[in-house]
Image (cartoon, rainbow, N blue to C red; front, side, top):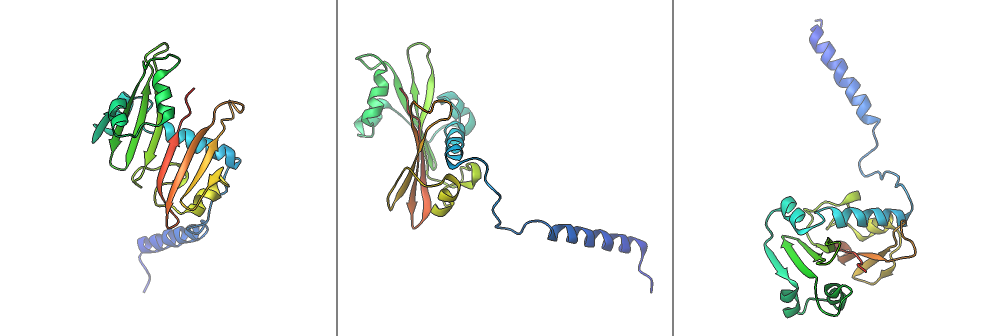
Length: 200
């Protein structure tokens, strides 16, 4: 019995699709990485530090109202303001003129410095990611294995059993400031990613 013409066409189409699918790379094969580990570290940092917005207003516009918002006074009372951050509050004066705010979401915390002198800017300088719902480039998210971080970003600048830190020396200013991205681990998996922007 001859097969209907439509069935023959469908069968031919299905076999063609199957043949083309078998020529694709198998799942799990890693694509080649572009650039040096230092260039990839710089790109990872720049992508992460700017991902959620560059000011308090942009972050709230992108992520909605935070679960909690704290000022530098709240952070000081909680003893969670680092000496470096106290210096940020001073700027180039002897009295505090700048402001710090912290916006907290589920699995995400961001600290912002508001500079209250010309040129009146805001900087997101500290981001802490503890949830895998926030997706970062190369899939280096919370929950990924430590060896994947090292495969993509190379050997860390500093390391111990619980964390890897990467200094980010920007290609546009190799002699100047150094930013930092740090991965915290538990049982070989990322549990925390911190981006720290150095401010002069």
